[in-house]
Length: 253
Image (cartoon, rainbow, N blue to C red):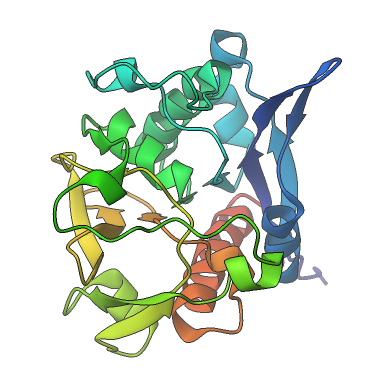
């Protein structure tokens, strides 16, 4: 008599390189904690660039999370103007995550891209970014004051309109909108041709996308759903991603 086995999905979590006395490959606690709360096992993926065998790694993972970061995508990656001197960058992360995003889509590995991750996804697929979206005429300031307590910085800050009939609307039972937090200075400028808009802010800023022809779950959001797991929209995104990863894990038993 055979036993039924349920595998916890292994979910890769993109790391930033923190330059201190030694360089550290690290991911913030809310990402790994949210994955664990959704039933997954987080696995930190170091930013090793070409030294990382992305196809082999993704063959062993059930999902891939591109996290947010204090750093911006290097503008040369999308033909943008040089970054301002004070702009924090992470070239080693760029060299890792852009390729990981493309390979995850190709291999059908469930992919969730958050904040910087959404920007990486757009750039990886041929799009471009506003480096300072608050300086674009008609756009709001989507940054959060740095002196606020963390819980307030990551609290819901503004509404988004969901695309009727889209994937995010379906996750929330057909809802037309939701509330999200907002902590970003960059935003999508030219949308990559393979991406479909799933949510927009009142000022027209693209807040969520889906890879239209991806064989698996492939969604990016500009906000931080890992902080809002009890919210129908953010919690729905995280649980749907974890569910897709669990399905892949079960299929590989």
